[in-house]
Image 1 (cartoon, rainbow, N blue to C red):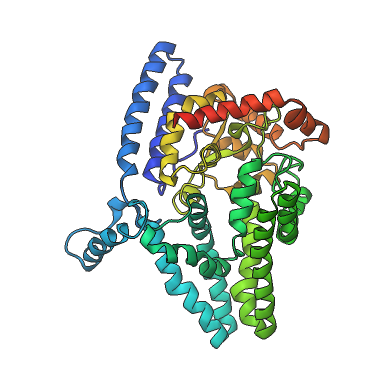
Image 2: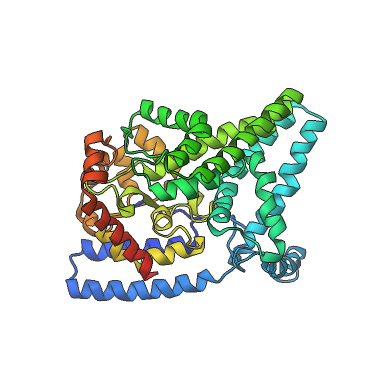
Length: 433
């Protein structure tokens, strides 16, 4: 509702959040509709100009914005003056210096640490290594997410490295070869949390712990066979073969390494794999736990938007999940501007926007049925602005209800017209961009 603003928010998040709060204040004051529309339009235009300026700033580190980096004649400032132009000549998009920064970080820490564990294993080093990888896994996964959606991060002359690093760094972070690409791009974005999505949430009572544990366990232990079978059922044998090849060859390599030298393999590959699988499902659950009971086919109503620090600052705007589903190829820095440009579409679509909560905490609060806490985190838009905290909490509770097979048949198969209309509305939003 009116939660405190986190001090570490990205500037782009702050601009959008202040814009939405202005809308809330104008509506709460009962401002004349014409005056309200005029003020809102003026604020939208000024916010868009501010976002345009930020869009062209290179991001070098996730922890600091460009304005926070050292200047003057210090050694660090001089190093950055050399590094940033050089890195911009390597990355495909000049604003994505941060991707090269992270690649250098992983090759300078994760790779040598893993190799040394195989040469000289100690329990302390193994534990520290896993904790280091755990601290990296969010940023890495979302950098990898950008890689698979855009067919690379670096310029053409570095294609050899751009194609190779996921096979080296990926398994160290808990990703099997190519599985993320085939599951996320070729499967999840095709099905969109619908009934044939292997990671769909609609058949679960999403605020029940048992259903959640089933959801995580199914992906963690059955993805290796379910994904190839999904492609086979869809009459895509080559995708079935490729997805199986990447997943199974990774597992075979890990098994051989474990037989050769178990303890290093436990800390270098097995524990990161287990933690990554659990983390991916907790995150996806949080992204798609709140599904509209009337129009679950709409991307506006089957995913959410987060304006927060962990998802957006450290994970390349992963909080703008609805925007990502509407256009999976959109650059990560364009999500705030795209949201603001289509704010009315989000309002008409009854989309859900939250602040100061990430996907992990979203999952935790839903499982606790703590809907009043979630209501406090809502940034209301449209008709939500006039709802009380209790009304918002009651509304959110309805979004976690299990869809029966009869309801799924009605919403996704029999009622094709409704589903088509929802998709047409979403596609119209994409075309505007």
